[in-house]
Length: 167
Image 1 (spheres, one colour):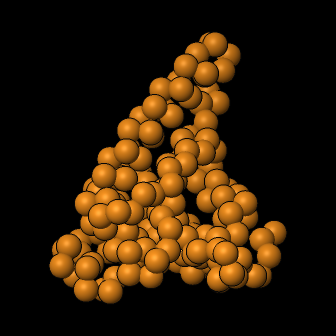
Image 2 (cartoon, rainbow, N blue to C red):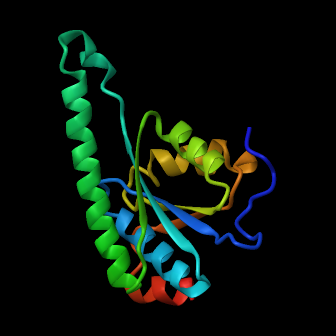
């Protein structure tokens, strides 16, 4: 399990905001908030795209091709997300990561590996179907034991509201 202390505030370390990049329209709100907050606090920004493993097609011999295609799509989303972050906070150069696996596990493993990650930023859906499965899972079931604070950004906030809230 993840240790109770983080290195992000020790000398020589900078805190990092971790944003989960997906294909939802609300994701841009979390990216903007994290980028603006990083600029305000001098933190670094880590963007993570998670690819579901193509376990169903391994027997057909196309699993590796499907995985490569999914990773290429994730890399494209990360590039778009990095452009949004740089537009919100010029000079910010986000770290871009792609992981293959279950979302909850991938996030926890990354936080365990990188002791400078201090905050997880998630975008909340605004539709009638609820805030989204990732927000529901992490902010609900795991929130009391999660190793870093979770920031949930409502998906319908305007840029001006995000800028004011981020500082």
